[in-house]
Image 1 (cartoon, one colour):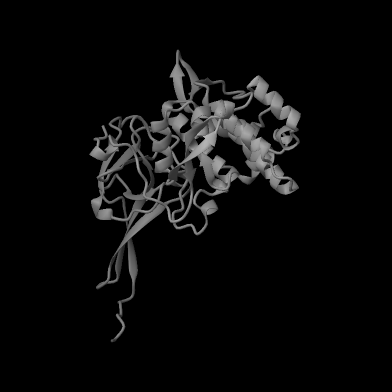
Image 2 (image 1 turned 180 degrees about the vertical axis):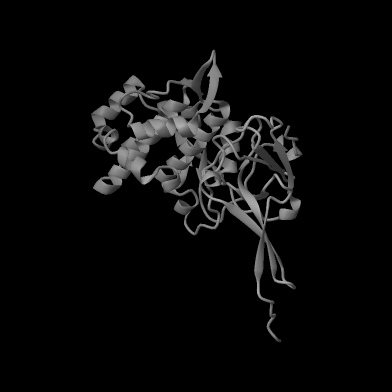
Length: 339
């Protein structure tokens, strides 16, 4: 069979498809789209065309039969690459060799929960190892990880007596206490675990707040780069009596919960006690399971020993391959309208 021969290819820049709105490209934070034909998309534009900061704001909503998504080109959910790069989409006429090139904009689509959006770190569902599904570098940059060396020293060198004192004073959550009890003896592994446990403990304490002072989110012991990360990635800027403040909204609390779960998975070889974390985060079981399933964890049960020699059922979350499909609450499965 003779190979297909195209005329000399040439391209023509056409700007925005409709003269004002760039073409929309999407990616999904919790995996790859399997059935594009089942998606329904709606693009919302800001009606304030006079305000230069608002007139280009867009919200893209998407729905399947069981899950809804939302993405935006502004605020905490926007992709930084939209301001640093230019994106294009091309339409090739194979007969003429003409490539029409249009301006495009990338939207990161997040699963939409019952009352808020959950911003997940990127999920690499083509990973060949559990540790690559949610990559550690998406939780902490090298500079942020390096900054944890000093504040995590107390955890790294913790003694049995100090752990008992933590329990008596109720100064740390159950997950942190149990993780400190099982720190590895290998120096390098112990150092990594101590840094991760310290950051997880910090996230849980940060999540318990509602309004955060900008200068010092958790006190003088928190490195500046970590303090900045907490404020930038886990709070919403709001105005109150003419003053700007950092608010940990319900959606930000859900985001912190997702990061805590992923960090715990990296600490505990990708199987964690969700019931224990649920208590530490003061969440309802339904909400915890909702988030865990959206994060593609496999849920199981196990009897665990508790105080006074009794036992109770705990839910376990395991990150293993192949990943199960993402799930969410029954209410969203009814294709709730986004308004």
